[in-house]
Image 1 (spheres, rainbow, N blue to C red):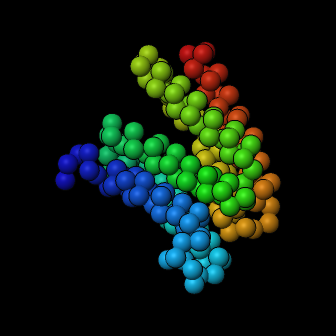
Image 2 (image 1 turned 45 degrees about the horizontal axis):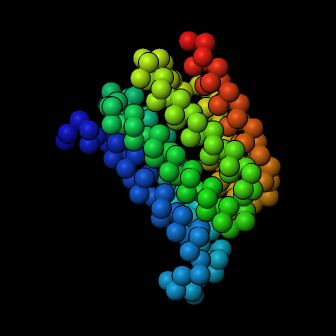
Image 3 (image 1 turned 90 degrees about the vertical axis):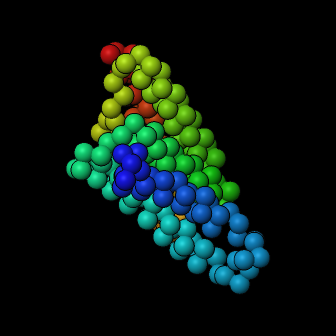
Length: 180
């Protein structure tokens, strides 16, 4: 197997493929394919896809570190897969009126800004390591998306907690870029 096509990178590619599938279950509810389905089943399938994709996020990083399979391709694919999954989740939920457009705007704006900042940092040979706040932000975003998909209580509160953590971790990345 090619070094680039290792297990972690295949898991990231799988996550990339799951993102549009999940979005399909969230936004194409009027499709003829789903005409006989109860909307709750669409939530269940979107939720299941999201959980599977989220689990691959944990395992691709764990396997890459444990098996020493970290690659340049993986360094690109993993955050891309994360962003695509979050983008599909938040946009789908916004279209369904389950997520505030302001919350989605703030989260996605931070994600694009920090991605750009990381590209600049790499070009300047600066460290762009993930912070603990960034990891916690990702977990809370995932939990919020799961709760919103399932339309569970406290979903909106979790979304706004995710916004706060997202903005704080963005502040940390920005501060670290300018002080290092």
